[in-house]
Length: 118
Image (cartoon, rainbow, N blue to C red; front, side):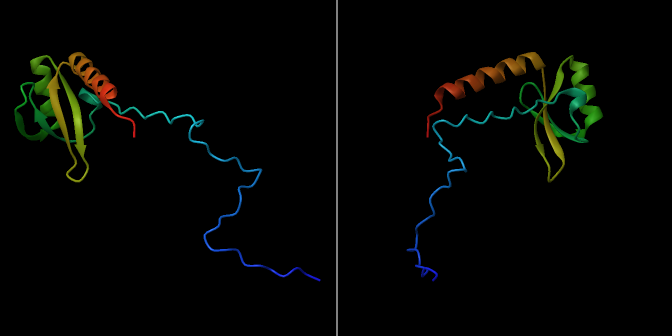
């Protein structure tokens, strides 16, 4: 004769199967954070650019070719800071690329030191 089926109490989960490994967050390796790429000069793909000068003043939205020409005229680089997909406009700043990356790394290191564990 078959055994009668007894209903399981609500809220109980079945035990983990021995073939399926369980996840232990303390031994799992942390996921590497994906590095965001910094686009400069001809690497910027947006057709329209909101230009920010080195002193922080905003210019109007202009074509990429004109923004590149202004940066080249000043002997500096055009660095993309953000991209607005809804308006298809990149925000870019005219700066010295080496100095920009140096300052960015310093800011990132300060953030890393001051962040708190959750």
